Image (cartoon, rainbow, N blue to C red; front, side):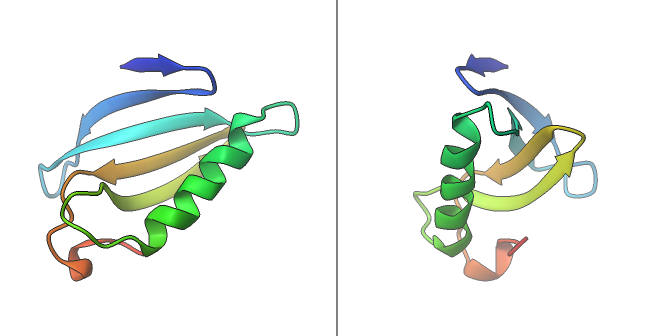
Length: 83
């Protein structure tokens, strides 16, 4: 786990595929300047398809937290979720 100014990053294993993924949690709300940054990051990752850029695996909003799931090395565009 790594703490950042506007959230935390956790290493996790996807139960169904057993792939290692990263989960970034960010508090959302008007008082958090990082929320706008992370939403911009999500939009960029949605369109990126390159083996050297992390692949957006999905996003979930829970209570006041936004969970962004990514995995490394998106070999094929079909492997990446367009969540």
